[in-house]
Length: 409
Image (cartoon, rainbow, N blue to C red; front, side):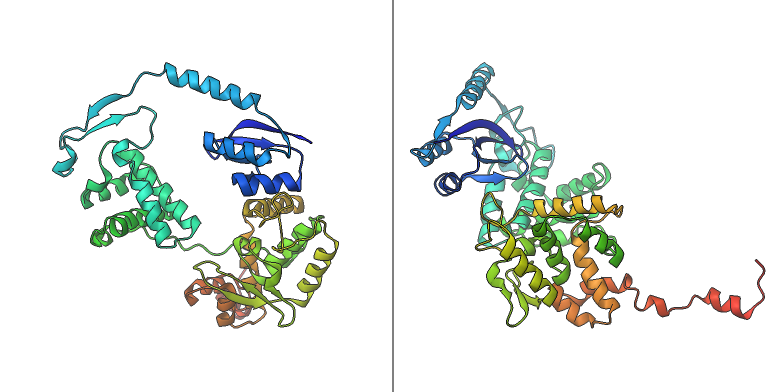
């Protein structure tokens, strides 16, 4: 029977209990199922949020399966308890007079101020209410996380001013502050506006007054891609067959990294030669072509790789669940470095390359739109600007002038 070590762990700015032991499928399953533990690829450890309840769940999950060493965790908690007891009690204070044109109901409200509290108690209800509404509206986890993070920035800035009482004029002033003082980029500003719109219009049921606020114009950015020689160097830089198969699949089918990691073995239809993409961006299902070459590669990978994937096409060896997207991005980054590619591109460039190379080969843009899962043809038309198919047939007017006239050189 091995010993499991419990230590304090800081993960994504949250206090956690780190769980350390040699890889054991039984222990993995026990702490996942009974203690809801998660695996951190960056920390190389299992973890749960630090709480008495989670500690008790871990204790019962490991009972009879392993011994527990928790001296480091107990020492950390003891020191933390001393620090808390040494702190002075919080001080009561009143919200200032109607300096910021906040409606009257909040003027005389008394709140407790905590010096190290990022979001003051007067606005403590905002994020929970917003999170609940996001769940009810079935927003994706990534969108919900973005909205909550952006709304938190506003709450931290206004401090003791009640967010529910902010007028349109104050919100405009805040956005000007974000643009001029914080120098936020256009995409971040769009996300912040959308988050604020969601809270004031959807949660508080305000009228859609927010459209009067001028939105920053998004810059037109062309897709960044790799040419065929760079792709060959990138793929050849990989030695791990599983990693090769991952990047082959992304390029061959034009997938997003989130679509790759969620692919299941059952999604590969070798009879119809199709790949089924379930609930992709915008909760939209689609099918893409399955390349015969890719099919042979995937069959070889599944046959030779140990442990064999059981549910997902690419499973994490530690958790036996879907591969983390960050790990796949890191695999691409390492391969790019080994291949000596200096372009500022990420794994999404494989999807851009897929679309552009199809255009170069004469594929109708409407088919490419469906393969990529775009809602609007205008999104796909970006690739017309980087495709070389039409560019090679364009002759510069300077060339004609050079041929027709006697120009000195």
